[in-house]
Image (cartoon, rainbow, N blue to C red; front, side):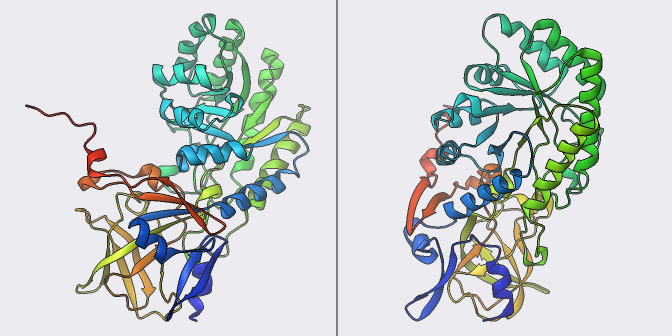
Length: 441
C-alpha cells in the first residue's frame, strides 16, 4: 500500500473500506461496492453516505453543548438539496435555509415543519415572498426595500418571524468569490440601515425576532468571526438602549471549510469553530449586560461535503507535451468548482486503489471548455480506459451548481446506508432535457 492511500482515504466518507473483489481490491462505501454501483447505474454517478452526514450533525451538536444558552442548527440547502435531503433534515430536527420559492417547495414536499424553514435571498421576487409567507417560519430580510415590501402584506396575512441580515464589514479568509461580510458586499444591511429597519418594524408592528450575518464560505480559521460578533453585539446594545428592542436570536451564518485534498490535512475540527463562536457570543452578551441570545448556526458544506463521492469512467488516456491526461465522462457540468474557484480535489481508482503512483496526472471532462479540468497534477498509478475514478468530498456545491452545458444530463444520485443503495435522483434523460422546449414552427 502506497503511503498516499491512507491520506486520500481520510477524505472519503467514514464508512469507506477497501474490500476484496475477485482478483482485485475495490473501494466500497457503507458496504456497497462502488464498481458494482457504477455498473448498475452508469456514470457520472454521485453517492451520499448517510452515516457520514449523521456523524457531522453529531459533531455540531456536541460542540454546541458548550454554549450556555439555547442553540440550533440550520442546514444550508444551497449545498445540496432534493426531496430525500429535505426528509433527512426533517428526521434529524434540523432547520433548513431556503433561497426562494424553489427550495421552499422542496422543503414543503419533504414535510419540514414550517417553524424550521428559514428563507434567505438578496433580491427576493414577489413569488419568493409569497411562498415564504405561506410556508416558512422565518424570513431573513436582506435590505430595507424588502422590508417595505413586506410591511403592507402584514395586513392580509400573519408574517413569519423576521430577522435582519446585517453586514459586519468584515470577511473571513477565503476565495474572493465566496466572501460575503465585507463593506461592499451585495449582502445585508449597514449599521444605519439596520437601525432604520428596526424602527420601521416597530412602527408597523412587524414580528422582528433576530439578527443574521455571514462573512464567507469555506474558511478554515474562525478568528475573523470574533470581531464581527463584537460589531453585531454593539449594534444590539445600541438598539436596546435607543429603540428598546432586543433580538431573541443571533445567527452568524455558517461556512466552515472542509479538506478537499490530502495537502489540506490535518484540518481544524468543526469543534474549534463552533466553540469559538459560542464563547464569542456568550462573552459578548455578558460584557454588554445583554441576555443570552439563542445561537443558530447555518452549516451546509461541513455537513454534507465529505459524505458525497463522485464516480467517473475514464474514456481516453492522452499525452501532450507536458501533461498526462485522463479524460472522464463528467466534470464541469456536474462540478464547476474547479473552474469557478480553482478548487483542488484528489481522487483514487476504484479498483486496486493501493497501486503506487506512476505519473502526475491531469483529469479533465468531455466539455468544450479549456476550464473543464477537474484535477491538476495528481499522482496516480497507470490508469486504463474504462477504469473508474472516485473523487471524494463531492457532496456540496457540485450538483447544486451544475448545468446542462453541451447538453449534459444531470447524473443519478444514490443514498447509501447499511449495504443498501437507494436512488434519490434519477439520471436526467434526453427527453427531460428537452421538456421545456417548444418548436418554432
